[in-house]
Image 1 (tube, rainbow, N blue to C red):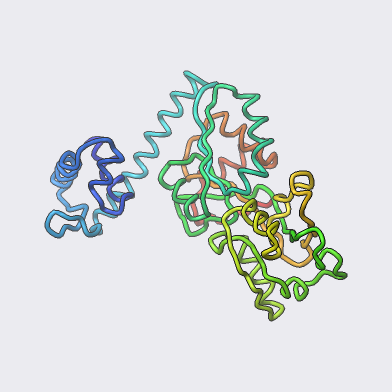
Image 2 (cartoon, rainbow, N blue to C red; image 1 turned 120 degrees about the vertical axis):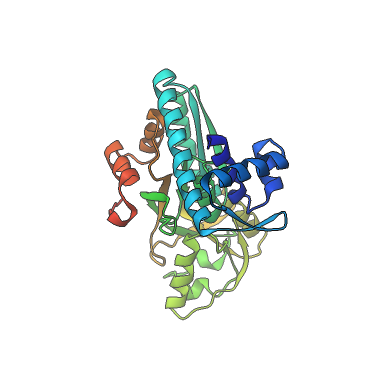
Length: 316
């Protein structure tokens, strides 16, 4: 048994049992991957994958256990590498962050600016996606940390901590009647076509609940993955935009009207996502604290290394 074989079976599972795709991702050949998997199965005395001819069609019960152990072993190998790098090159490294467009565009710029001023030799990578894609990036170690709008409770291998709270605003063309509506109500907003976030974003559920609670069915004519797209179509006069308040810039968006609607919708929380049992480097703690000062090293470590069933409660 060797680490390469563990990498191979994990990549095959990640690629949905497609050996060709796994071989491409591993920069090796398909026969080489198949051979290494067979050798590992022979050594363990169990089949890891279900086969139909030459195709893999499923994962066996013992295979599932093997994959879970292999994932933990791979994480510990990564932790060992990070320990070595921390003590040999403490000021150098790479930090990969998975997040949404709104966070990348409107929340992270000052945090990244402060971080890079303190850690000029650390290379940053930003990955953008919807919450499920972001969780997958964390699970697959394509990202070191994430900013998401949901707790990640359905992923036992992940932990999430609250960073900051946010609410919403409406944006309209500058002469829109809603800018003069008093008081501004959900009923008034529901009279107009709406443009808002895609259902994949957890903040969208708070919007749906608010309208449903008033017995309203808004006319959502267009959904998008990021705030800038929403504002583009609002500027074309296609509808009223409903988006995160932080995504409205009075200078950049001076050709649009805006009204705060925090009184109409429940507050949402942006959360920091991490893989459980991950050893963090010093600059990773620094980034998290620049993002959210209340997340001390002690709080982060307690979340990372406590059991999922411990049910720790954290607040912003």
